[in-house]
Amino acid sequence: MKKGIHPQLFSDAKTTCTSCGAVYSVPSTVKVQQVEVCSACHPIYTGEYRGLMASGRVDRFRKVAEASKKRQEEVKIIEEKRLVKPVMKKAKKGK
Image 1: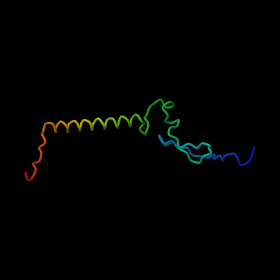
Image 2: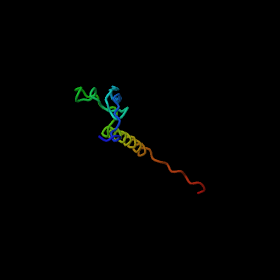
Image 3: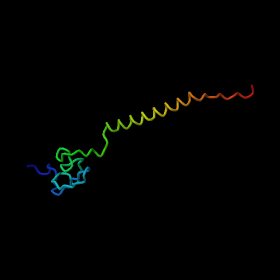
Image 4: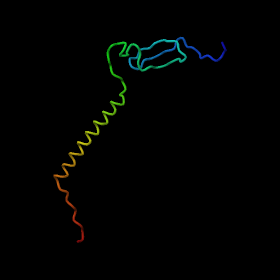
């Protein structure tokens, strides 16, 4: 084998799960790394669904749609109040 072309292997590399906080010592070419889901918290391995920490695109869309719907209802109430109460024009000065 050629010398100097192979990456350095760290036998005591730490892998941390960001979901459950589990820390594993696995040989790797990276000294410290993070994973989103590990075997201790993955739904396929555990048989239970915890939900993801970060909201996905669908959740963000629903949140924006709900806020938009609330705003439309507020605007509708304001428009109804304007129709009920007539707007008085100011009298011009000097005539």
